[in-house]
Each structure stands twice: as C-alpha cells, then as structure tokens.
Image (cartoon, rainbow, N blue to C red; front, side, top):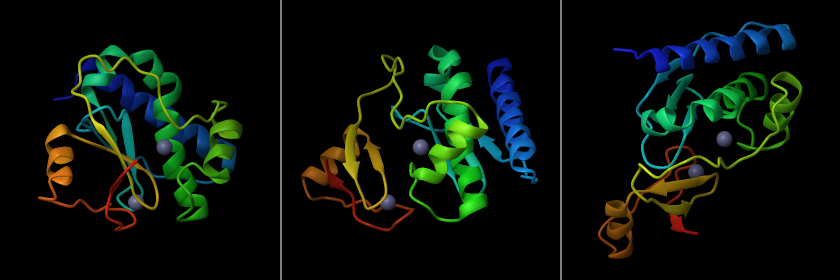
Length: 159
Ligand SMILES: [Zn+2]
Ligand SMILES: [Zn+2]
C-alpha cells in the first residue's frame, strides 16, 4: 500500500523526470520507487536497475527536505547515468544536472532530523560512503564479517 505521503514522493519523482526530459530534450523512463531505505540514509539510486529507494522513517519527519532536495538529488543520479554512463557519483555531471536541470544547490550530505532512526557508522569503499548498522559495525570490528560495496566491489573500511 502506498500512503498519501508516498504518493506525493512518486508525484515529485515524476515531475523531476518530466523536467529532465524537457530540459535535456530526451525521454527517460519512470524509475521504480521503493520505500525500503534504512538507517540514516535518506535515499539511494540504483543505476542499472533504474530504481530509487527512500527512507520511510526519515520521510515522515522531513517531507519538505525530501521534496526540495533529496528527490531531485536521487533522480539526478539516474539522469547522470543515462546521459553520461558510470561517472563519479557526485562529480561534475551530477552537479550540472542538479544546478541546471533542477535548480537545486548540489550538496552531498543531508541535514535531516534523524532522531527516530538508530545510529549508524560510516564506512568507505572506492566510490561512496556507506552507513552500517551497529550490528554490522560490531561484526566488522570483531573481524567476524567483511562487507563489500555492491557498486565497486571494494571491501568497506572505517572512515
Ligand atoms: Zn548522491
Ligand atoms: Zn563502492
């Protein structure tokens, strides 16, 4: 079931896609949208899958920020991938789309109210920052488990 709030997110995603299509004079398919992002990450873009994932807990407390910034941010990752292929996630192509297509200041970190989500731990790979849960962080620290980035295949390491 899609809540009215989630419907508004879907509508905003559609608007962003329409805006990008008009600005760049080409068509983009509507992405699949899921509300299953966890932790303190607001959203993520899955390029080959043409899919967006948003955090349903953060969405409830931060609707305005999602509409103004997070949705365009994630859609811009898809558009950058469609236009330029595999480029640096927050590199010049993505920044250009944020600024000239969506007129949004490109920022890589959000400032949301995260009081209702469990704390997470930052890890790095070759391409981005990952937020790990306490359980995964403990597994890594005890050497019980190693986690790999799905995008670049590197083993995650602490910041
Ligand atoms: Zn991003
Ligand atoms: Zn990576």
